Length: 230
Image 1 (cartoon, rainbow, N blue to C red):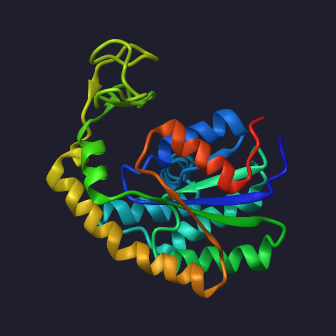
Image 2 (image 1 turned 120 degrees about the vertical axis):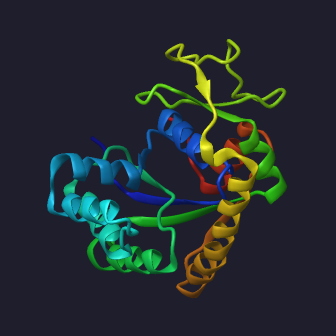
């Protein structure tokens, strides 16, 4: 188990490739992806106090509070169960309040961790095109992501089937154009506030133009962040 040194926040719109790039960082750089969604499900399954509070909020039809999500992430940092030298936060923080809570926690309790913020910048029209061609494996334990766009590096080897497990590929309900536009609208409401916050606290934001091929984006990302492939 490596000693955690870096926290890397992936910031960008849906369809900017954050999830796929997280996987590449895990496979090629030995980094770990921290998914708040997975953490929530884990706490609920284990019946922890945080899990009970999250489960109650969800079943009550309420949003899980920023403070509860932040508490869960703080406990993960303190647990020491992380692997690799860097942990990627994909999709967290989502709000300025979450960003403030995380920044304060890192400064107070984990000053040894270096925070880096990477902003994957993609035009809306590119996002709509990408997500319109995105399909995922229907197997709940797999969920591999594919693209049916021409010449995509994420095309399945067999049409309509997952390369890993052979299950049929399906389209996510939130990848339909009207839903994509709504998700983008929500994203734009928060992203400028997040970028302003990082600017005010003197946190450098590494900007990566992500409207190109996956291999190109990964190469640009590695150069800008100074990462060496293990």
